[in-house]
Structures are given as structure tokens and as C-alpha cells.
Length: 436
Image (cartoon, rainbow, N blue to C red; front, top):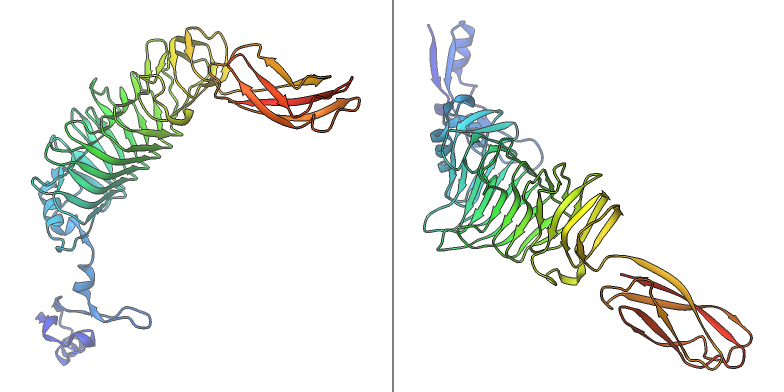
């Protein structure tokens, strides 16, 4: 005869298994069935506070607690929604054990962290797969990390962030979405701000639509203070389509873009980004409308256009284009910072302040107090840096003839002035270095 004992009726502090009824049942060989309501749980360590097993388990919520299967065929959307809704008003974490969850997810509350290392979110044909948005309110402090997001080759968005703030998307692999991989936008009544997308791989992995971007910012609404860090974007016609403002991209890699690497109509700043594209050929147009970007092509690249959109748009001449073994460039290269690399057979017109280092020697003799130096090739502007130091002399130059008082610069060259003429047959020589 089986004896069922409700552990909640036993003293929790004792561990709930010291009842004489349990002992008697065990001694008689009777099967004991226990309904767990308040098993005692004592954490180890000084100062640890006793609690119950139930309270301890409820500190972490799994989608499988609410019936999610992760089998790749059952639609787990309702179970996932119920798991998110079960979080207390102060928020918390929802975990996704390893598995494939056919679903779409809507996060419409703040202070939510979804973690899915080993979990795949498979589209159930609803656009988008993941949405962070609450109509009439602003969702904030949402963290989404560790997922593989599979669009299944459909014309849908992977992750869509609408009118939210303080949202992080990190360590995800978003693939198979023919529409945007990540879309960050307002809703016409409010802006989206303080968004971070980091350490993600965003791969269309199927022919994307012509208007799709790996990351789309600001389309359909205002987006401010967006940071993109260390993402890998591939197989999209546009890697980043930025219509917003205050966007910073750092260390991202764009590969196989066929139209535009970065299209930025806002105040984007893209620093140290790396374009490694096997499709840099004459039919492609690499457009950088704003920001400071480094482009590194493969050997033997043939680039039709690299343009900034408007002259003088790059601040502080920070833009740099590095190309290895460039075999053709044309018809126009319009940048402020310049082009560097091993260049051969370069065609087209280049409008650039090319980074360079020049050096030489000049001398002043007799009664002269200045010397003019003319460059072999004129500089594009006179905003280069130039230093000069005395090197050698002949005869006995007058005191002060080795002290430079002024250097005037033009695109054609410069003039160096000294304090006192060497006089007589004396000569003073100066080494000079130009840096752009």
C-alpha cells in the first residue's frame, strides 16, 4: 500500500523527511510519494540564509517551465510569452535550454533578460522573429543574448527594436532573413535610443531583398545614440543603412556587400571598420556618406566608386582607405583622409589629401635669411605638417643662423626663415620632414 505524504505538512526547517510516519513507511517497505511544496534548502557558507527548494528554483525561469518543447516543430510562442509574463514587476531572466524553438517573440515590458546559448529561434512565419516594443510606452533595459535566429529564408526581420531604450543585442547569430537582420527604429511618436548591437554575426545566407540591410537604423522613425561594436555582416546589399543620428560603429567587418558598405544620412562615425569583400569589382559602388571608415580590400581589387557624398564631410581628415594591390580605381575617388596601400594601374580621378611622408634637405648661405623649397608634385592643400632642424654647416656661421623663426607653406612648397644670416662664405643646412 502506497502512502502519500504532503511535505508541506512537515516542519520545513528539518528538511521535511524526519516524520515518524515516513520512517514507519520506510521500515515497512511501503512506497513513499511526496508532494514537494516546502523542502528546506540551506545554502553553504557563513551568513547563508535558509530558504525552500521551491523558492530557490523559482529564482530562475525556463521557457520549458511553461510548456516550451524546443523540438523545432511545435510552436512555442505561447509558452515563451507566458514565461516572460511570469517575471515579477521588478523583472528578471528567462532562459532557453538547448533546442530549436519554432516561435516569434514579443517583449513588451522592461527589465527583461533573455538568454539562449545553445538555443535556436526558428521563424514560425511571423514578421519579425523577435520584437521589442510596447505601444504607447517605452520599453527599457532589455537584454537579448546568445541566440541563433533562423529566418528560414523568409522575407522577414530577425530582431526589431521599436521605440525602446537601453536595449542590448549581443553574441547572436542572425541568419536566413531576407529582410533586415536587425532593425532599429522609432514608431512615429517616439524615438529609440541607447541601443547596443555587439559581437553578432548577421548573415542573410540567402538572397536578401534589394532594400534590406544587415543593420537598419532609423527607417520609419528617429533613432539616436546607437552603438555597433565588433559585428560581422555578410551577404546583404547594404551592410549598414543609417538614417538616424549619433551612431558609432567600432571594429565591424562587412563582407560581400554588393551595393553599399555604409549608407549614412545621419551623424554616424564608423572607426576602424573593415570591409573584406571578394566582390569588389567594377560594377559595385561603395558609398560612405558620413563617418571615418577603414576599407581593406583583397588583392587585385577593381573598385568603381568610393565616395563620401560631399567634399569636406569627414572631420579632422580621419578617413583612411587602405587597399592592397589596387589594380583599378575609377571613375571617382572622393575622400578627405586619402588612400593608402600598394597601388598599381590606378585610373580615374582622385580627390584626396593622400597620407604621405616626404623629407629633404635645404641650405641657407651668405647674407640670405630664408630658403624656398619647391615640391616635385604639388600638395592638394597646405594643411600638412612640416618640421625642420639644423643638420650640418660649413665655415663659421653667425650666431642665430641655426635658429628657425618661421615656416610658410603653400601647396607648391614652403619657405624657411632663420634669425640671422650665416654671413661671409658660411652655410647652414637643415633637414625637413613633411607629414600628412
